[in-house]
Length: 426
Image (cartoon, helix red, strand yellow):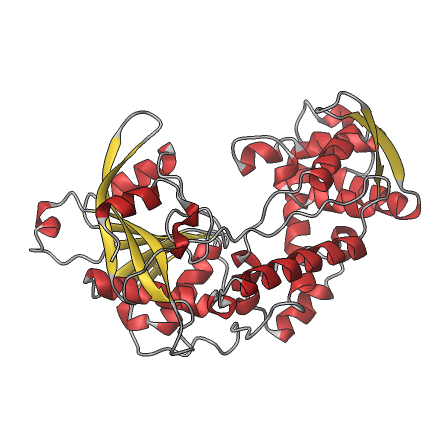
């Protein structure tokens, strides 16, 4: 078993510690710790590692560890065990996201919830952003040439090459990657709940965390007291709808067109027409734009095509801002500049994506492709006419599922083990 000193060392950031001895499956070790907010306030926390089989479908599976945090309730009756109030289990999105409890919004949320009950945070197995016995499961980043416009075919080649390379690397190191799927992360929650001594839990999550919650509810309904979900994604909705995305863009465009400050610059026909016109033009005639390389100070020419435009308009990370809402305020101006043949911002962001692509976690394709999509919904969204302008907004899944899709579970993989009545506030 891991000693307290070794546990503290692991949580201090020893990512290579995933190779040390583990405890028996179903057991955990923990140490007292504290988390300081950016404002200086401090939360007491129990920080631990929970030991689970790497692949529950294989009896001889080795044991891995999942990090958890437990914030004890401030209600004395709950802390003393005199009142059994179901704890809140916080689930992050992604797959591959991790909460930063020093951030004011997360810090305040925990403080609010623990007024009446324990709060437990569980990391996703294999998430390299989580401290603990976790291997650095990052996908390799592969650059794309600057002198050719973006293309769906080239993106497909890059996505498949990165995943193939990563699967081979980690399989050779002894990882059973079939265990990094939606069913195993659901059962991680269930087994940790039991190990910590809770009969029922409250699920609190957003985005992919809501899918994780729905999967848990279907598989272990008798242990769920209620669910508090936002940014809801039903189990069969990991893939986005071009129609719905286009409708959101249309609402944003109409709001911008009604702004007195922007109205004089709005092209005839509006911002959505700008997207359609520019897409058609760039499909027929890609352009080149020059920017200054911030590292060298030299001018760099970037070839831009319709796929580069599609990638930019559908991704809020194209723009700067503290939140997605803040970033979206730049979207109308971006389209106005493009309509005036100013491609510099698109070129700069395309340069970043091609030369400095963000690192992605391996569990993103592993877990999401294990969740999958039903053939009926896949066919429906592929046929939506808005894809003509947006392209395949689910290209990453379509590109990688042919490499890794061992047993998609959207339709059949969550046979419940019991029945329950619970409340879901979405």
